[in-house]
Amino acid sequence: MPLLARMVAAPLTVEIRPGAVKGLAALLDDNRISAQGHVAVVVGPGQGERVVAELGGALANAAVFPVEGGTREAAAELADSLRDGSYDAVVGVGGGRTLDVAKYAASLIGLPMVSVATNLAHDGIASPVASLEYDGRKGSYGVHVPIAVFVDLDYVRTCPPEQLRSGIGDVLSNLSALADWELAARERDEPMDGLAAAFARSAAESLLRREEELTSVEYLTGLGEALVLSGLAMALAGSSRPCSGAEHEISHAIDALHPGTASHGEQVAVGALFASFLRDDEHLSALEAALSRYGVARVPSDLGLSDEQFVAAVAHAPSTRPDRFTILEHLDLGEEEIAVRVREFVDAYGR
Image (tube, rainbow, N blue to C red; front, side, top):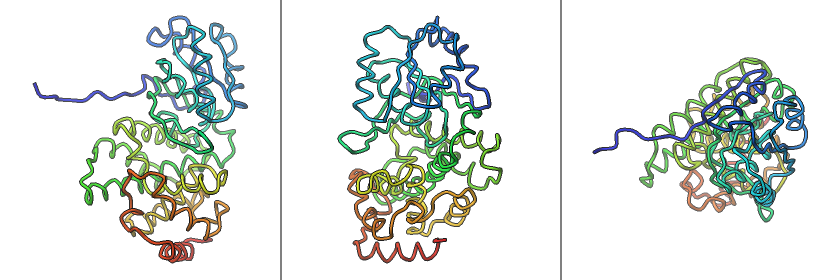
């Protein structure tokens, strides 16, 4: 019998709204996740602890595990601690690092994971990928898709605006990633998943021409939904391909050569604009306008990098993902040629 449809891993619940955390206790009491709230709650410093304090007695049967940092070692240590108890699920509460540690640990021991995001800095809140540091380098690791996603906009609105700009950059960079995927399909016959591409494109285009205030409920809801869609696009594709191309290679290279430079989302925003410039992309003007409208980084100096440092990162970028074909591999520019294009890019878009 022919296969007529495919099953897609997706959260049972997605709530993005002010006060969303108040729905967490009812979710944990749902028999599909935990009959009596016997869960491990993983919290990072700051807002994660505030969420746990706010829920108070609603987490009476839960065990709380504080974590710091976003390393594979921290995730492995957490997994070892979780094995000593008997839990129905892992609840990660906090920002991207905390959620990635919780996702990875939950996957190691085979438990479902609930994602409670207190910021919107990147698309990991609902993705099957954990970005963790190991031996001084950041890597991406496959994990289970969260079984539920909560984004409480009351907490998100208290975050530094830089975190929101990072999330915007991560979503809008999908446009560059998809152009690279299409290029690989044309040049290398790489299979392209149309449904995954549709999710990733819908996420990016939903933000491309929005003009609400950055911290308005309307804009933050749209940003949260776009980040969830990006995560589901990766789940559909079975890889990060719909949301990761040359711009992510450049970001990985910046992390390797100049660790701690800027947030992931702002690095991929600059990478996406530069990659779009290289291919004279149809979305170039709209992408630049959207980044500029919300003060997201666009050129190397916005990240605190000199042009020369950015040139070195672009030259190093293809080595960060040898299996991935993007505009960088296609053009195969030498360092002197890259320097010329970076100079033209900065002249065109530098403030």
